[in-house]
Image (cartoon, rainbow, N blue to C red; front, side, top):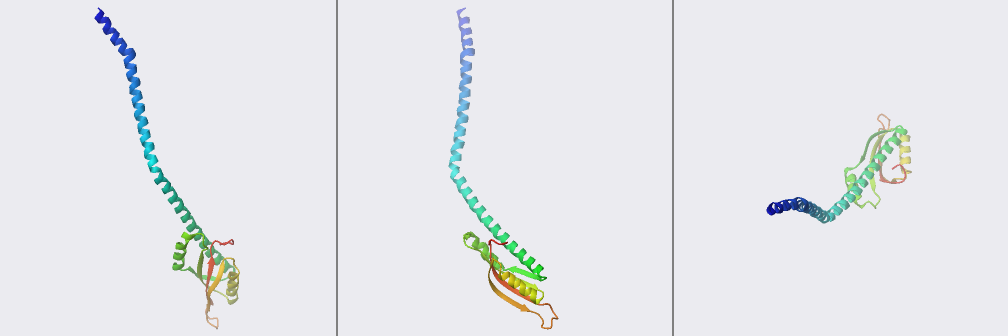
Length: 180
């Protein structure tokens, strides 16, 4: 009889004390394991943080470089549009506008030193009346971005049997306060 009571008390003790304690211990073990995993992740992240910072700095420098190149490309396109518009106002026909490939490559390499002013040599081939061609040259000479005329060659028949053409080259400063 005492054996049955003792067995019942052991079973009762197991259900009331030991099983809840075992469950709490397992929950604490799971929580400890989760905390260890989070600490390992945090340690791994901390180890990778300098690489992330270096990548961020590199990407920031790359963004600045690409923005400066985009700025120069926008300047060049605005300059070419303005030259076409000025020629059209004077009833001149633009045959060709060419910044040379060498000039564009030089400009692209120079953009890494973005604190320096950027220049571009432009060649434009026009056709039209003599007075209009002269007005075009006068207008370009007085533009804020013009930094000198490299060449001005006029050709055509003296008798007027073929249209007068002018090959005009000048040096332009990119990023000036004017329209370019």
